[in-house]
Length: 436
Image (tube, rainbow, N blue to C red):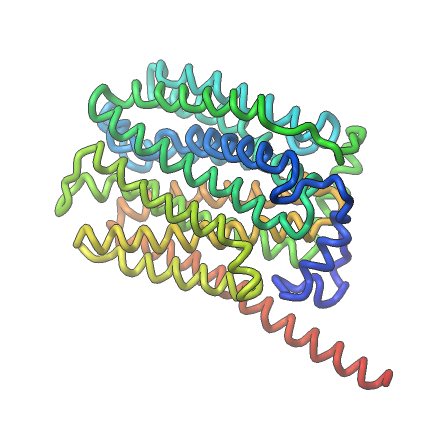
């Protein structure tokens, strides 16, 4: 891991930094996976399937919250805990499970996490009360914690540096497909047979994805097991948290996910109420908007190549903010257009930030990714709960206000990085002039 004072390479999203950092983090040895090479397609399909299962399970109740509220006589804030408990438990468990992946392997950890989460997913439809449902969802979120950070570390170790952003973009695209398909499936099945059957259908979808992942994921060729050492783990985590670049990336991930968690936790309540009054199946179909996220995350590599990392973040921020403001209109077309912009901006920003974490950490990559995932899912948990509270007190405008504040936070962090990078370049130029 580079020290905090290494100059421009540690400034947030300096366009010149990633390539050199990646070269240190992942030397381009001949047998690393690369697009068109052997194993890359299998790896892509396997992690795409894992991404589908992860988001389909993690957010399985989100599109069903109005039905869950009606079934248990719960408020939006109470029902939102069926989402927030899962994401919060994932955030708390991702770091210790990533440490286990350093000892037992990324592939093994991803396989075990997915298997346990799938089994719990098949039990969740039988929850007898809202309390039991929240508790089972928390256990499921904890089980899923072993997958995201391990996947990022696996990609950083097995994929050539120049293909890393694209590879992570595909994994994030799988997340968007999972989030979309799970919610659409849940919405229509719930309209026909109820929310419990809908959750069972999502569990079966995750079973199919887990089988695909198990048979396709390539064996890790660049993983070196490490002994479990709590003191060393604490030192690694402290080192990552002392790196200003990583801290800013963690904050960006948390703030982007606060927006996304708030919007998609509450949108179902808004659309079933007047002036829209949409049925559950149609509300679930709104999540087709996730296809936009699939495109924007997969295209993150090209976006960074054209605009630089900070430029890509500025575009993601402005797109998300425009979507939030547009969604305030009471016309369904405007709300849908707003969701398109919010989704595109979020997934692009997340792909850029998460790939920057993987390329910045030169040691303890699993812990670096785990810290990002912790921040990211804490943002989701906070966004879901605070968004529901804001909706209860101020309607949709309250939820949008929360989202705008989070977006302004991302903008402030990125502007700080831009200013710091400019100052560092001027300082470096002055030193070079003196030496010449």
